[in-house]
Length: 450
Image (cartoon, rainbow, N blue to C red; front, side, top):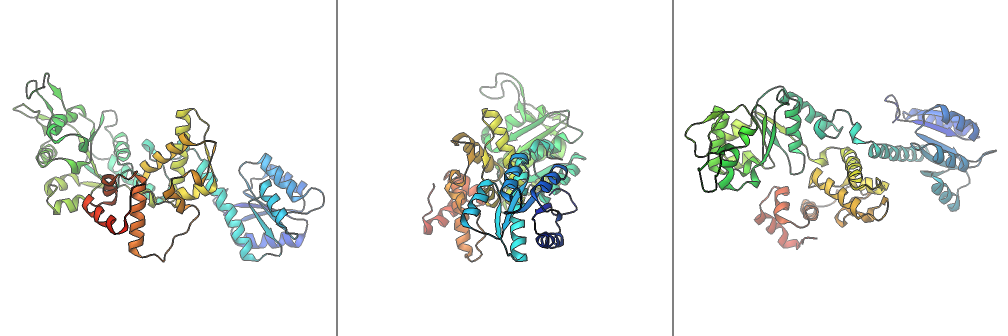
């Protein structure tokens, strides 16, 4: 909250000294820093000089009322929550208080547990809003767009810093959409090779017949259509780094040639009789288990060990605590600027849904969702109803620990399919299974694409 030494700063306002004493004693024992005021006028003077996170105010007091204080706070202090307490609880009063901006409505007499729960709810709401509204361009220690402050991201940055001090080959692992290329870029641009080129290559997007010529280049006349001599990606990356994404998609013959490059630091153009030295750092990435592929003899063991000098595992978004709120705010700001629209506002229920969701497609899925929401939104406020149907369950929900493992698996498969618009090939990749296994799992449940 406001300071690292306490859970938050609270201002309690009540004309009864015994109530103020009760609030101060209970909340101070829970780690909050508590200020008190016997009336609205004193409260306003204190607010003008002291940073406050939460105001707890009585409703009926001599002079200005608690409702007047709520309106004053909402009109003058953007980053503050308000909770009302009263000995005269009515439904009409509760509705009026909430409409005026009160976070909660607590009737006297209340128990210590009821007070603690209400204060915690208000402070958590404020914390979520602050995290959501924090612009990611000001997030500290975010090299090359690596946004997040979770423990998992701190460990990732530490690994990147270590890798950047050497020229050793790095194997970056992680699920699809986690940002493996961003990690590779962060390593390159934090290293001594930063002034030279960073060349990303999607091995899965290059046809097998063209992999050698694309990576190593070719001489004029080496094959039909080779009308000129051309350098490959390795020569382009001279003195810099080459990023071989989806390394598992390279052919067996190409794996042999890549092994030679790693061993000898030489490449041979198609049609050439001699090799040429290259000074290139290799960064490779995969979303598949290379160890399992080696056991199946689907990937060369010797190449795997050459690549696996330094391994960096990129955590999935679901393991990054509150980073999803930081990333969401970044994308909302980015897409609003690109489209010339005002930055959309999300309801608290939407923020909670984003935080609770499993994110099988990771950051890429989050980015695509937010871009779609901004494009399709009819007004500035995004509500839960605007989210895809498969995300509604996560709005304010708690984990159901009474389900069987089979039920959890089927729900996850359904969510993954929905996140990729029913693309079974893509869903199988995310789930780490082949299409045949996915089909078998779908049969008894008749799960269909949305």
